[in-house]
Structures are given as C-alpha cells and as structure tokens.
Image 1 (cartoon, one colour):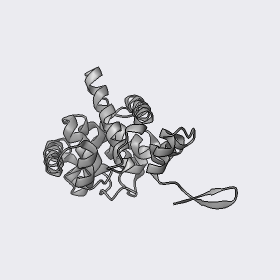
Image 2 (cartoon, rainbow, N blue to C red):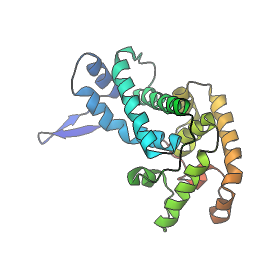
Image 3 (cartoon, rainbow, N blue to C red):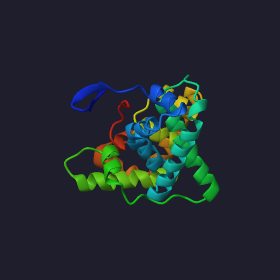
Image 4 (cartoon, rainbow, N blue to C red):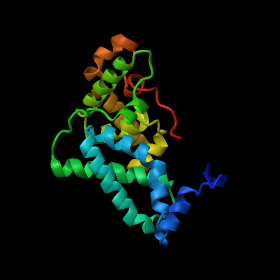
Length: 209
C-alpha cells in the first residue's frame, strides 16, 4: 500500500514495522497504526457490546492496552489479529465489570452501513441491522464474539480462532450454537430473504481486507 506525501508516493510501512517503531520511541508510529485499523476494531467492539458508548470506552481501553503492550508483541501473529484480540478482551472485561446486558445500538452510521445488508431499501436494511444487533445481545458472549468475527467481519475460522485464542473447532462449535440460538430470534427474517444465520441476515460475509 502506498500513501502520498509531499506530492509523491511513499510505500506505507507494514504494521509490524510501525509497532516496532512505536516500541522504540517513534511518536507518530502508533497514531498511524490506529488510523489504519480503527474502523474495523470499532465495528468489532460495537457489534460485540451492542452499545455505542460501551463500545467507545472498550475501544479506548483496547488502544491504551495496545500502546502499553507494544514492546511485548512477539510477532508470531498478524498485528491485526493481536489488536482484535485486545478489543475482544476489552469488551469482555467491560461486560464482567458492569454485569449488565448491553442495549441495542442507536446507530453509528458509518459502521452500520459497513455491516448492514446491501439492498434497494436502506430503511429496511437499517431496521434489519438493528434486529440482528438486538438478537446478538441475547446469546452468550463467547458465541456472539465468534459470530461477529466470522459472520459479520468475514474472518476465516482459523483467523477467528487466533483472535479468540481457541482451537478452530471451538469457533465452529460456537458459531453453530450461536446461529441455532439466533434462529428463533430472527425467524421473521426468513420470510423476507430466506436466510437463517447472521451472515445471510447481514452482508454475506467476505474476507477482511
């Protein structure tokens, strides 16, 4: 990936290089890393917690943890995997501390648009996105996190397993159980588009960029 600086194209530094520079004291490296990955990390936090304020707080905590832990990054996984793992853990910590059921998000337009179904009726798409978000808050956190990564964010099962630090078989099991729990909650959507899981109700998955 190249970026423009001073009217010329400059090759962007790899994520691991930015993290290394930050650990060595570069004052700008971490900010560049945040700008590069914030949108997807925000989407994970918002969908996992289901509340905009909670997600914002979790994301802030995650970035602070990443900022402090950069020097301990071992480099045996992608930086994105490492960052998303920190976000998921921050979300879980907030749920444990507060012991509350998150509410349905009122809507961050950019994020909801990125994960909402693409169709001719944007109002229906927005309502559908909220239906799925509400249903997700009614299933166990572990299943919800797996479904967010695999069905909503488009992660391969193996990649989701690395983020959540569990075997791929556990991800498959959590997704299957989560979809089974969601099926009766989203039964009314089958009559609209014939889908029965989060992926068909949302955007059809897809590999993360």
